[in-house]
Image (tube, rainbow, N blue to C red):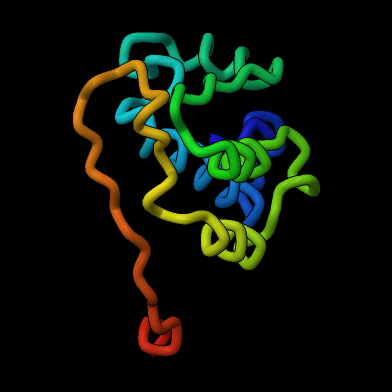
Length: 124
């Protein structure tokens, strides 16, 4: 959850971008951040407010890491908008999100390839 909502309770587009950054991290980690299921909400909230963020997963594409780290900037105005996120994602080769040669974990990772979405169709 966007750390700004802990103090102002206002959720906006920049809050959505923060959440999207967390989801991007979850896709590479295959787990929830901060071991959330086993810890108290207040402890996690304080860590996030202090600027703590989850560590990138070894072997993840550097551009992908940079994107999700920009998305979870503490200051909302420093986060990209959705057009910038889409542009950054488009510039990343989906087959290179994971650098499998550098992965310490030998688990097989299924890579999801991007697809085109007709936004006009979604809005009808």
